[in-house]
Amino acid sequence: MRRRDLLRIGALTLFGAGPFWASGAPGGAPGFLAHAATRGKVLVVLFLRGGLDGLHCVVPYTDAEYYRARPKLGVPRPGRPGGALDLDGRFGLHPALAPLLPLYRGGSLAVVHAVGTPVSSRSHFEAQDFLETGGGFTPTRQDGWLNRYLQRRPDGHRLMRGLATVNGVPVTLRGRVPVTSLTSLDDIDATADVDQGPAGRILERAPDANHSRLSAHSREVSKTLRGLKPQAYRPSGYPDTALAEQLKLLAFLLKARVGVEAVHVEHDGFDTHAHQEAKEGGMRPLMMDLAESLRAFWQDLGPLRQEVVVVTLTEFGRRVQENGSTGTDHGRGTCCFLLGGPVRGGRVYGRWPGLAKEKLFQGMDLQVTTDYRDVLIQVAGALGCPEPRRLFADHAARPLERMI
Amino acid sequence: MAGESCRSNDLVRFVSDDPPPALVDRVAASWQASGGDLAQVMETLLLDPEFYAERHRDSKLKTPLEFAVGALRVLPPPPEFLDFLARPPVPDSSPAARNEDSVSPEADVLVDVLQALANPYAWAAPTGWPDVPETWSSTSSVRGRMLLATLVAEHAEPLGGDMVEEAVQRVLLGRASEATRSALREAAARPGSERERSVQVLATALMSPEFQYR
Image (cartoon, rainbow over all chains, first blue to last red; front, side):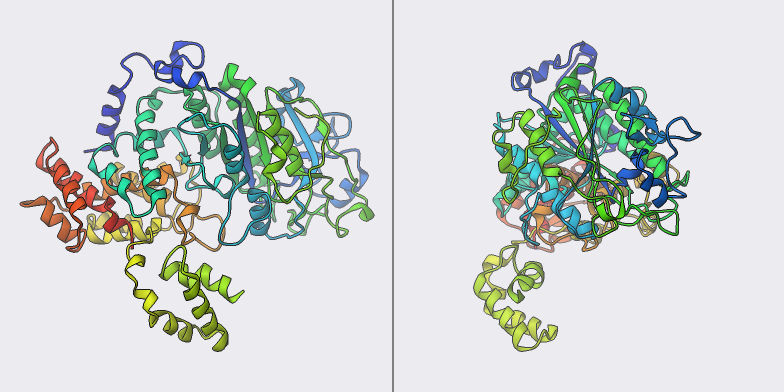
């Protein structure tokens, strides 16, 4: 039995008619009417792994200290060759992020600056652990804040509540609610139908209850996915990148109404210690990928935009002073993007602490004036999570200006 | 602290995901008394009756890597596949990058699944894949195992004669519960060619608790 044969079997089952997205309005698929009644908002966490240089993405071009600290890397002021794209008279986008500008001007994209975790560790792993658990974890047992978000929301027996578009379960989504991970539309092809025979059922009597539950859930997911005809889904505008594959898959599943509520998407490689502006291997292609993929995703979503909020997170920002290899080293404060129908976009939020030496954390880093958890509490609340402050037990929540 | 360290390392790896506290205490005491002599600590562990207790047998789900390596070991694919698998992983996993480095479509599928399921370098933190399944088991990891089991079964030498007994010998080294045998019989009785039924039986054996747990 070849994979192509599996596909053929999959394509014949469940729906004899055309693919669900061709039927017009979202939610029009016959098999998903049951889910349409429980439709809700979707929280997408886009993890920019490696430590995003927020000063390079959203440039504080009126702060003279920025240009003093970054003689080689500094993005020129708006209007100059290669200059930043002005956002609000104080900050400008790196030109590689140009595809995001229309979203900002159209009011669906906002920026929060000088945001971060309270962790002063410059270790990726400690900072990522904190970011993904939300604090209060132990080395052997971890529970991700996004799984707690799912735990706090009403269940409604939806099938694919938690989705990770990476292999395995990222810490963010780890916990009691079962999580599906798929990385591209091809994964749906590849896993359709293989587990419907005795080989797929045998682990349902596994020695541990958790695994037998996952096994049963997995077969349910497969059964649903195989009717979706992903091979024929060809939206335009996405670049040919791993991030675009993840977002394309996400748009596909959101349109299919399989009950997705919380998503972890990942864009890796922001640990830019050297040659940050290099055309290959530097931060510039990563930013272009980010901006083009998000723009394509936003177009692809269509009317679903009103239900989706994307939050970018990263473990820390980078040092204000550029290093000797035209890169930047691990720092603290960074920026965060909020993209979504309900977002009050077109603004840069947050209190700017300034880049003068005495204003910096340990004399080196952009200070964190907004705890990322306060941003998430506001977003989670707006998406219908009851008592969102309780997502972060160890955190004394601080209300922020309304961004959503 | 010593207790915590033992719990998270030796005992979780060798005994159980949730080791008994009394055993943790005994191993931790040995750690402290010997000043952290690993040989001494392992001797304490291996001579402890609790280590051999029936309830710890088959209680640990194999990690993705243990499962993949085990499956390829009992049902080896043709040598050219293994050569391909021995190559270093492609760091850029974009579809374009993967297409440049290809042996055959069949090998690509197997390599993709192995990369996705069991690439030892794919764990984001430098500590590698943790021993406790809650960090990597998901709805999809079960499907991934299922897919890998099917692919390995497809490329293995097909079963002939008494398929159930042969699968128990080749994959499960002769040890199978009645429930597992019954599932194997069901797989052997499915419609399809002899070869397709052989794939089903082998995949079922690879997915059985006897093979998935250690």
